[in-house]
Amino acid sequence: MTSHLLPTYARVDLSFDHGEGAWLVTGDGERYLDFGGGVAVNSFGHAHPRLVAALTEQAQKVWHVSNLYRISEGERLAARLCAATFADYVFFCNSGAEAMEGAIKVARKYHAAEGHPERYRIITFEGAFHGRTLATLAAGGQKKYLDGFGPVVEGFDQVPFGDLDAVKRAIGAETAAILIEPVQGEGGVRVVPHAFLKALRELADRNGLLLVFDEVQTGIGRTGDLYAYQHTGVVPDILGSAKALGGGFPIGAVLATAAAAKGMTAGTHGSTFGGNPLAMAVANAVLDIVLADGFLDRVRYHAILFRQRLAELKDRHPTVIADVRGEGLLLGLRIVGPSGAFADALRAEHVLSVAAGDNVVRLLPPLIIQEAEIATAIERIDAAARRIEAANAAAPADAKTGAPA
Ligand SMILES: *Cc1c(COP(=O)(O)O)cnc(C)c1O
Image (tube, rainbow, N blue to C red):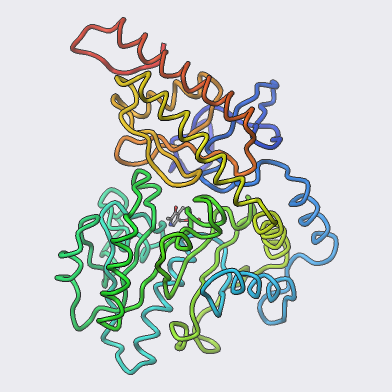
């Protein structure tokens, strides 16, 4: 046995000593352009001075007090999140799965408070990912993650991606809510058309359902707005946030309107660590950065620039890159051959990416990315594509694996 870590991950044999902005550096001084961002978490790069200061300053004061007491940084963070969004209330937790678990509980409790505890079912979409707890796995409905873990948590009705008629058919007397990611991240960077979200909003209103957005991956500037819903013209009742909200410090949040949260009275939900002073201090610093004048404008500018350059690469390498998709700096390359081989080729060029479903490789640059770093990334992605082309040219016609040289 080489490691006592439970072998639930297929890890790459690489480890990093430290990070600087968009870069991660190994113990041997090898520099990698980090376009994985710890899976859409390190949106402000590594060792951002403002985040380091917020964490270390708070660490000298108090780390943890529990929710038996008031936490002023948490009150401030909740007020700022509400001022910047549709929400009236925020519940803090520690991860995306916990945020979505909380969102599901808020939606169910709403109907119970309305006198309809029988309305607990939630409509979800194929290809979704909402986390790895038992309820969020049931919501995601992915067989490979559910297998062997006992009875699937009851109350989720999954319909095909983008199928409005299926949503209508799935609505029944027991339906409580519709749950959707505005852009499916793990599912392959699949953007939900805004017209579809609008139609869901109308269906929800007509049937007394709550609309729940999972913005764990799309939130905190990733798509060019603080939350992706803000450029869709559709406002949810409940929203789950996590990942980049702590810039690398674990945190999750459930945002809700006062109406949707009506069932969540004292004692109905809780978390020992949720809203812990360290997490609150860092997340407030994250909001300082992302809400600063012009920050999101620069994200949108760099997103357009990067996407245009990626589209050029797709045209240059049509046997390698099938499609460029996404929103803002949540971008995906759909690969012609095996996407894993392309991610390997990127890593050989010292670019980190994240795999996704639908044969997609996600590119998630930090939101603080500069033009020079985008140019470097494009050169390296180009080189990775050339590696695949060379490997294909060398392989016999019936065995084009796309493996890197
Ligand atoms: C990552 C993710 C989750 C789960 O978050 P964890 O922090 O891993 O529990 C839930 N929903 C979406 C859309 C995600 O991308």
